[in-house]
Image 1: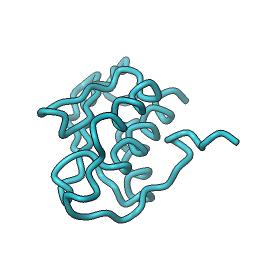
Image 2: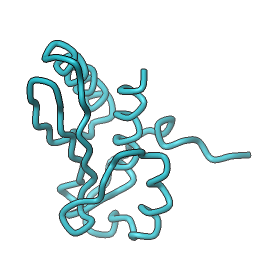
Image 3: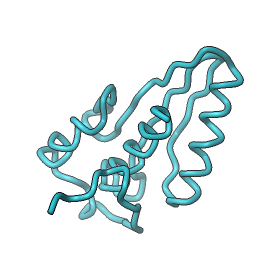
Image 4: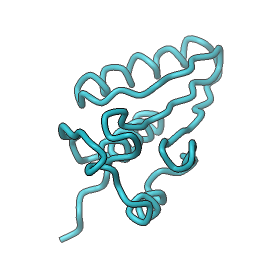
Length: 113
């Protein structure tokens, strides 16, 4: 039986450095996250989503806010007229956790739909 995709998983409460993912685990997940980049010395996942206009940008931001609330894992967002920069990092862990990968995959699925 195949493991569920990242986008089908749910975020769980984490805290502390021990919940950080090793880089090899993050690297294995990256094929499920097209266009996402490791940033800040591999401490964050970042992607810029492009849209036709401000209305579509805000529609994405609002839908992403709903998902973030549902998962209790919130991105840093930079919102512009026709793009939104999404950044995930687990502040309590000081780097990337499974929640960041799951949330990025959910953002990717949201954008694709």
